[in-house]
Length: 278
Image 1 (tube, rainbow, N blue to C red):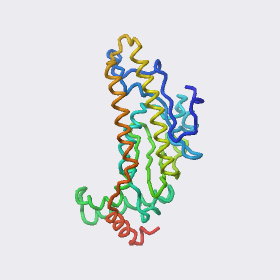
Image 2: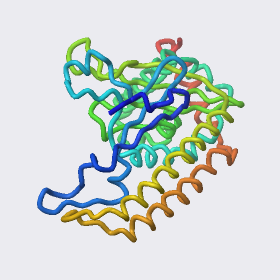
Image 3: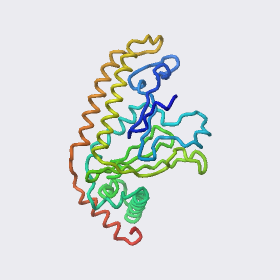
Image 4: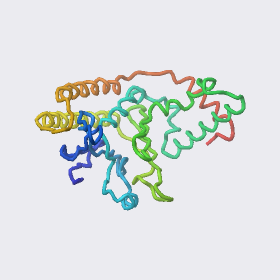
């Protein structure tokens, strides 16, 4: 893979695997090619001078596979990302901003919140249902989180909109051996203009779905031999996936609001206890 093809100038950078190098899904005896499989490729996020989904050189030397960036089906990233668009589009109130000032403030607040909820659970012998209301203390974080459960040691990324900005915080501290991190940048935070953020997602989408349209056209023209492929479904799914993405994208600009009063009250209640003060 020649990574020189990456521009390194975009927020979301990707490269589709050459179609002849894609390994079909299914089994050896019954291989299958579909739209999902055709999205096989490489992807990473460029956040200022840092990146997410880029492997550390020490880890690469151990893995010996020469892969520099996250390699998987790109549609999985898109599916997980669009799932949080609705909450990401809802701005945070000013009272919460100190908790996401930077990665360290965010991690401290997250750890404090988890410890506080566990104390409540133990003290009052509460179950998960009993803690539902208290979970608002931290649920706003989870609902803005982009996991990567399909990757070994996958990074967790959170997106927090406030005013005309968005702060991106990530944790990618998985170690393949003691003190050898899998990812080049184990944690960090990056702030950018929200409209720029939207524009970068639109640029990525336009490029990705254009590339996929060409890929589908090529896939339809190829004789796949013993590989099962429904070419009509490829064309139909290309249209469906593109339309669905742009419907989801609108949620980032909806400017919908939410009631933060209970969350702020819970945060203040926790902070009023001396051991949870910063």
